[in-house]
Length: 61
View (cartoon, rainbow, N blue to C red):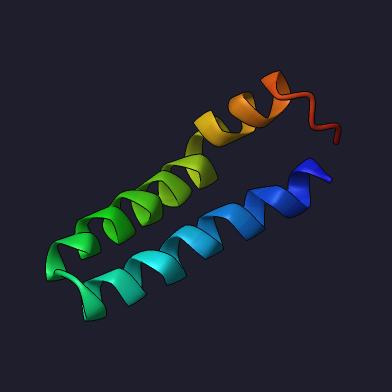
């Protein structure tokens, strides 16, 4: 379950921030870049804050 959420949540964040950038303010693209940078560093370090948060919330692998 946690591995599915590790794809769903960042994907939702990216789509929502893109919609907000189009409808509200282009500065929401900074949030998109932040999520993308976190996914990029996770690929190298295998460390992700979202994974830690989900673990503390009790989400199982």
